[in-house]
Length: 317
Image (cartoon, rainbow, N blue to C red; front, side, top):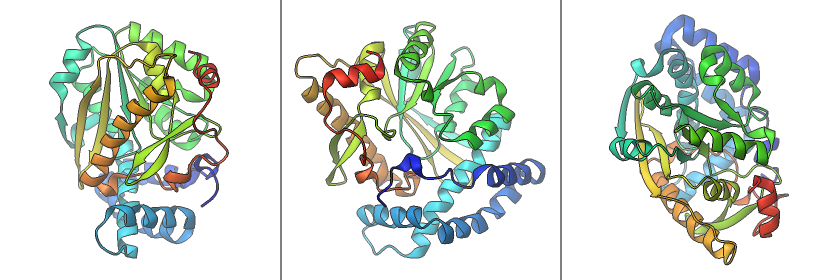
């Protein structure tokens, strides 16, 4: 697969998401889960690039030959989290068993009143973060989301949870606007959540080891962390089957410092640490990896190992 992940159409589009939403909300989660297997089969047959990307990824991780049912299990896990997003938005966590690890450490950071940057990946469900919002409603949660890339899911979010949608920081607005919005949220003591594994088209990337091969990760989240000067924690919302999720918070840094001198080496070091944790959870739960494209070649048409001045311009630092 040679095209950039952002050029791939949104999975299913508005009709498919409307259908899942209608069946789920009117028929309940049990009926919604029944239709996941036909949806899985449809995507397995119709979305060749994603099917091949899943197979190639699973071959890196599993210690056995990858069969079609492994790929369908992978796609099904993704579909299950999309379905559950509807219920998490509409009803909160009451339909789910959400185990939380690292909550005390998260609360200790938040109690400092400086705000907090949560960095996650496309592993499992980032929507499981809503569980923390319901348990600590006194602490606002702001999620950075590219509304232009996923218009159907954005419409779903705004329809089911308009209060949540109103607190989204739109990543498509540009570097300076994103930095300002995140800074203001942190000053108010908020948790600001950002996915840090995918590089947007033309975004600056650097390569660090992942599953035995250098993989490109975006530089922007780490320069944002440097600019915000707030504690950084990692967040993984792993789907464990059925209605079970495991929400994991890990302390990463009291503050990320990327000095102008030796900037490249500092970026490589901090990003390699991040990639190591990503790899750890890939091995813990490989079917939670929801990057359905050749992750190791996502830098097509983008700049790798960037000029520092260009990076600062992109994020408004």
